[in-house]
Image (cartoon, rainbow, N blue to C red):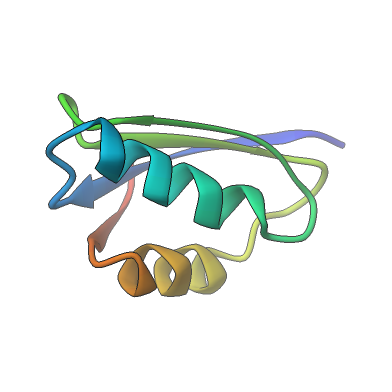
Length: 71
């Protein structure tokens, strides 16, 4: 079962930020697609199953940004 989740992320301001968040989240187990938008502060994550929000929060934090929560 495929799942899509949209998250609000604070601190992304450019394409480099988008690529950093995308690369980190794409490496999570089960993630099949990531689309980060600095202009809106939203990140869409597609996964093969349920997505562990704590893992998403950890990856976003390690990249230097703040996961606000699901949209």
